[in-house]
Image (cartoon, rainbow, N blue to C red; front, side):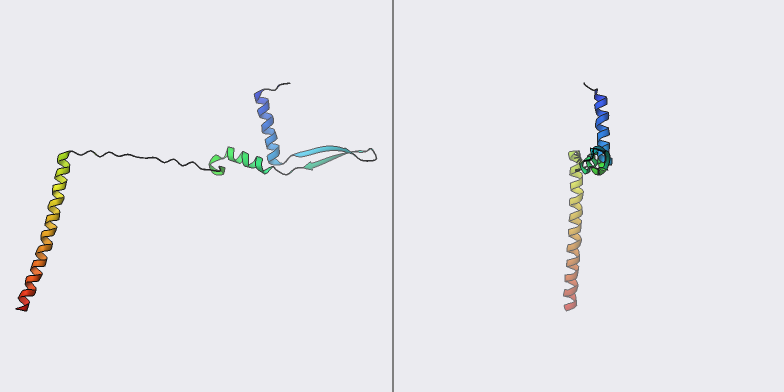
Length: 118
C-alpha cells in the first residue's frame, strides 16, 4: 500500500507533534491470572524533536548559526587634473603663510630680547 506525499507529510507532522508534546502510549498486558490490564503511560517530550521544530519554525531566534552579510562599497572619486592642482596650490600657499607667521613671531621675540638686553 502506497500513500500520497500529502498523507506521508501529514503523518510525519503528527508524529513530530507527538514527540514534541510527549506521546501517550497504551499497552495491554496480561497478568499471571489471565486478566488483561490496559496500561497507559505518558512519554516525556523528545528534546531533539523540540529543537528541530524550533530551529525550523523560528530560524532567526533558534538557529545554531546566524548569517552575516558583509557589503563592500567601492567609491570612485573623479576630479579633473586642474581641480586637484588648484587644491594643492591653495594648501601650499596656506602652509607657506603659516611658516611666515611662525618666522615673524620668532624674529620679533629675538629682537625684543636683544633690545631689552642693551
